[in-house]
Amino acid sequence: MEMFNSKSPVLNVHGETTDTVGYFLNDFIKDNVKLGNVYIGIIHGRSSNILRNRVHELLKKNKQVDSFRLNIWNPGETIVKLKIDKNQ
Image (cartoon, rainbow, N blue to C red; front, side, top):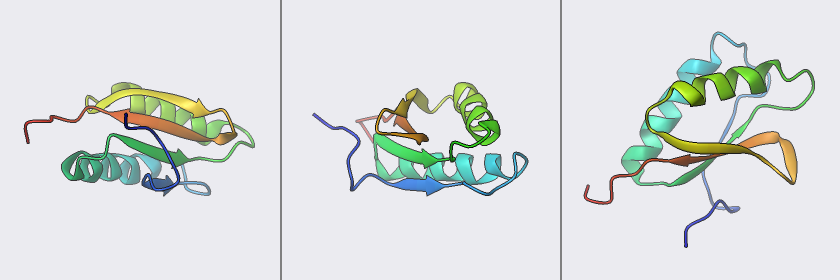
């Protein structure tokens, strides 16, 4: 069973603006779908939740995202499960 672990790819957008985070996030998702990675992490920080809310908003709209949730051990990170076509 695949799951998120310490070897899963992680994108750190902590410190980025809400305008630029979309470019990094969408490219990171596309690249990981091509690589066949099912789980990825997005580090957005946890101070004011502005970046977290923007990241979650973008994840909801992305058709390549199966599901996402906050990391229970680190609320400054969101764990994302991608839709991967096993027939690629």
